[in-house]
Image (cartoon, rainbow, N blue to C red; front, side, top):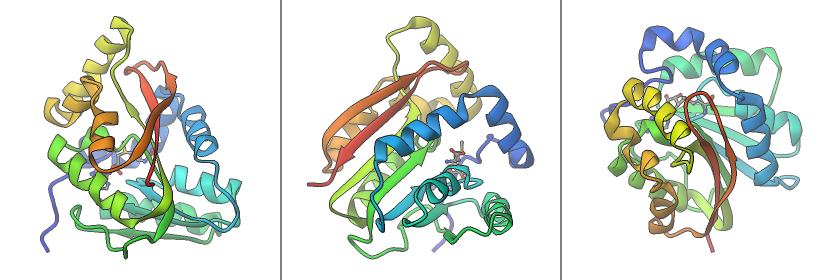
Length: 216
Ligand SMILES: C[S@@+](CC[C@H](N)C(=O)[O-])C[C@H]1O[C@@H](n2cnc3c(N)ncnc32)[C@H](O)[C@@H]1O
């Protein structure tokens, strides 16, 4: 099937080589990713999917913190995955990385116990968000959990204003549901239960929230 259109990590492909550097100096990246992993509470031996893994920073952190977990990273962008593969090889980590067409996840039903995803959903327009959430729901086990870190609607007008920088960069369509605080509702609509915003981080580009949900 033809590859779905997508927004690259830093909007323009030519910026991809700078992704790790720029995200690290402009965002509390480690803090957010560590909190996301802690929230996901990953027991020994569980299967974890990093949806939209990009350069695999989060994917590798999961594996390093929980060596007993079976960790898979997936992304729609082959070029960024090539960088991820290099990083994973360098650290000699046993992680499965793959790309896909941006439509259907190439996994069986109930293949994972946890899905984590960091700063991906604001790249997806609302319809793509809904389809991605339905796919994540399908590939998660019963009692499986979804943990997302992404931009959400802040109570602070300063944070809401700062999010406009990202909205201008990544597009108003893809960031619309994030700006309106609709991501938890979309997660519920996909069939998840116990959808809760667990943490909020103020950043120079707006508020990043950690949202957790369960497939009952
Ligand atoms: C801002 S980057 C975040 C990368 C990584 N999760 C991180 O936290 O560093 C957004 C990522 O989402 C990926 N992406 C965009 N559309 C996607 C889709 N439909 N399915 C999976 N990944 C997608 C992009 O290729 C990019 O790697």
